[in-house]
Image 1: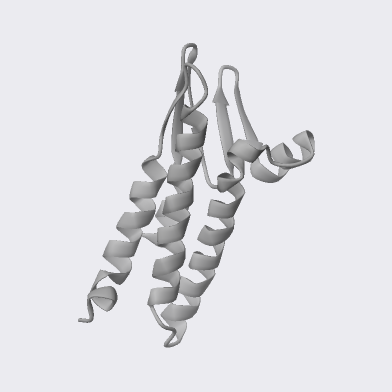
Image 2 (image 1 turned 45 degrees about the vertical axis):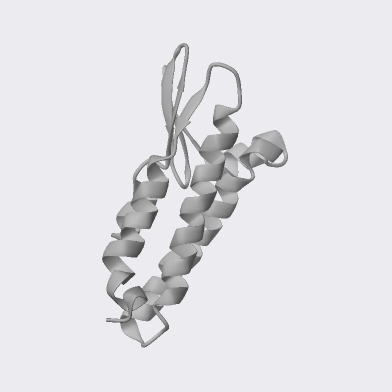
Length: 131
């Protein structure tokens, strides 16, 4: 579930002329079809614009959560660590969508926050509830 949460689109951005998905690792243009990775985007613009800073932070939190989840799988790490990182990544995805939606004629849906929080619930719900 943790891996799936990082592969599915995190934000669906709609605008007057169409829509495009933003993933943890980049975004997909649909007309014409092309993909821009997060590192490529950052290298093109020089730095992440202030309204998009939640995107690379959410990706870093997700990668840290994935690493700690894998470590938790092979050893006895405290399950609250990957759960907390996934939860915070979901918060950042929500902030990214909110920031994008503040632009005129744009609506950004933070579907990735739901995936990340579902991964917390499915993967770590029992541990968080003390069972």
